[in-house]
Image (cartoon, rainbow, N blue to C red; front, side):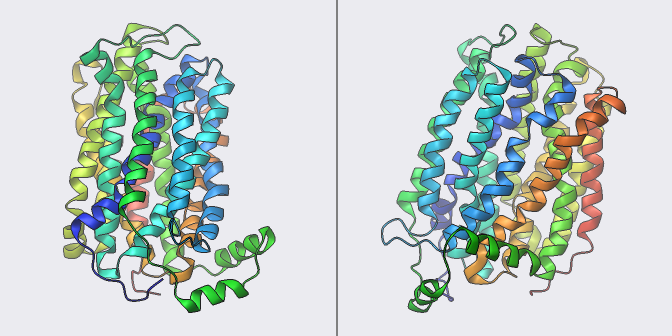
Length: 437
C-alpha cells in the first residue's frame, strides 16, 4: 500500500463507508430482537446470556484470522478487503432470511453462530479499510463516517418491527414457539439491505495496490495455518503501548453494552410495560423498546457528524471520556422509569446511550490506527476485537448465575450495572496517553 495517501473527497469517504450501513442491519436486528426471540422460543431470563455466546466467540476466532488473510490478499480486480466484504454479505443475508423461521430455541442459537461468523467476515476488513485508504489527518472523519452509517442502519433496523405493525398492520404477536410476522419481515428487509449496501461499496471504491516491495516481502513470508497463528500470537505479545491502554477501556466498555443488549428490551416489555411472554403488553413493550433503539441510533448518526469537530477541539481522549460518561448516566437513569406512564423518558435514556455509542464506534479505532504498522493493520484490528469479545464471553458464561443468584432475575438491575461499567470505562479513558507509538 502507498505510504503517502491522497486526501479523499467527502463522497469518496461516503462511498467507502456505505457498506457499514448494511452490516448494521445484521447487528441492529439481532440487538433489538434476539433476546425477545429467545424468550418467545422458551428461554428463561438466566439463559439469555449463554445464548448470546455466538457473537463473541465467532468474533474471537474469525476477526484476527480474516485480518491476517486480508493483509495478505491482493487481486487486480477485487482488491484486498473487498473479497471479504462480498463473501460475508452473501452468507449474512442468507442467515437473516432463515433466522425468523427458527422453529426451536437451539435452531435460532445455531443460526446466530453462523450469521455472526458471516457478519465478522464482512466487518473486520472495513475497519482496516479506513487506514488503508485515508491519510492520518482524515482517519477520524473516516471512522466517524462509519459511525454515521452504523447509526443510520441501526435506526432503520430497530424501527422496522414497529413500522410494519403501525404502518402496514402486520401482526406483532405470536404464540409460544413462533416469531411474530412483523419481526420476520424486518429480517427479510434486513437481508436485502445488507447485501445491497455492501455491494455498493464494492462497486464504487477501489483499493491501492501493494508496492513491489510489499509483494516481494509477502512472497518470502511463510504461509499456512501455523504461520498465521504464529504471527497472530507474535502480534498479541508485541502490541503497541497505546493499544494496551485502549484495550483496557474496551474490556470494561463492552460488558456494559452487552448487558443493555441482553436485557434492555425484556426490561421494557416485562418490567416497565408489565407484560408476560405472548401478551399484548409484552408485545407493545417490545415494539416500544425497538422504537427507542431506533432513536438511539438517530442520535448516533447525527452526533457522528460532530465528532471530528469535538475531537479537534478537545482531543480524542477527552471526547471519548465525555461520551462514555453521558451514556453510563443514561443507562442508570432507567430506574426512574416506573411504568408506561413515564415511558417517554426512555427516549432520553437511549439518546444519551446513542452519544456514547457514536464515540465507541469511532474514537478508539481512530486513536488505535495512528500507532499500528501499515502492513499489519488488519491483524491488529482483529486482535483489538479480543477486548470486545472476551468480556462478552465472560458475561455470557457467568452473568446468568448473577441474574439467578444475586439479582433475582431483575432485568433492570442488569441494565443498571451496564451503566456503571460505562462510567468506569470513561474514567479509565483518562489514563490513555495518545502520543503515537
